[in-house]
Length: 149
Image (cartoon, rainbow, N blue to C red; front, top):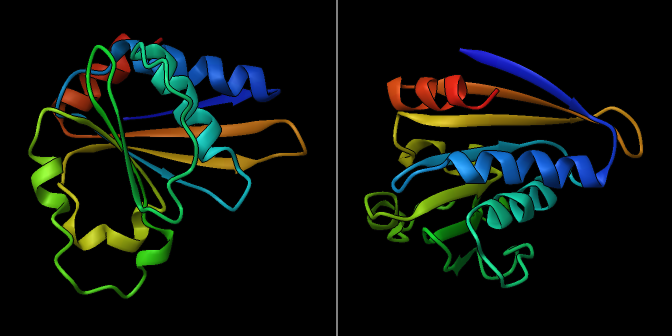
């Protein structure tokens, strides 16, 4: 199941993330793909708001993983620096936990990702506008997309 949503500015990107965050349940995995500056971290900030996270969410580029606490825990990954990485980094344990996982640049760790997930591709249309393509992989994510109107 695929859904495409266009937003016109930063505020709408955050609001879209917030709406999704309000629908997320423990053990859900969201992958975010898109060019540098597409809005992956901005969208994740919105997800955090939807989860009731009060701490400021910023990119985990140099730390690879940041964790936040709200109505559900959020594990926010940035896999950009993990291309061609073969070490066992212990991510599978986090994927199997009750955390909601959001992974930026997930294509770099595709071989360790659970099969079922919500894949989101963010395409930069112009300086402010973005196109989000949501692809549900698995029944619980198809249900999520049904609930996310």
